Image 1 (cartoon, helix red, strand yellow):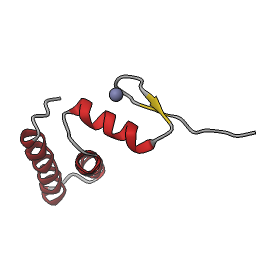
Image 2 (cartoon, protein in one colour):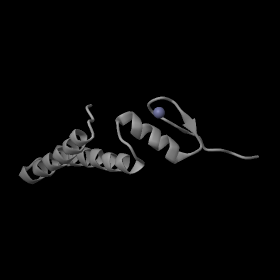
Image 3 (cartoon, rainbow, N blue to C red):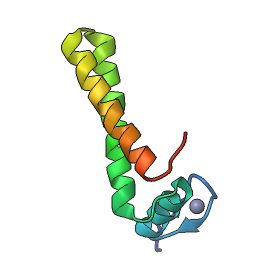
Image 4 (cartoon, rainbow, N blue to C red):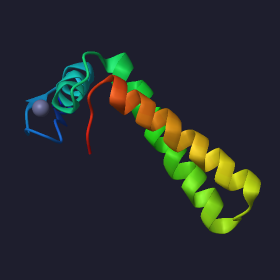
Length: 85
Ligand SMILES: [Zn+2]
């Protein structure tokens, strides 16, 4: 018996056994041209979420500044790639 792992695009439901194919499909739905750009965008969103959680637990000048910096980086990336959420 053989088993296959199937990946599914979160946006259109396209299925493939290729992880990269589906990651590129999702990248293009967002308006990005490559998997590398999607990875960069995912990392920026993760950083924003992380620093938001830090502010929630420990709200002070330093944690707010780190959060603001993460948001700024994400907004600059989104503006550069024409992403509007
Ligand atoms: Zn898709």
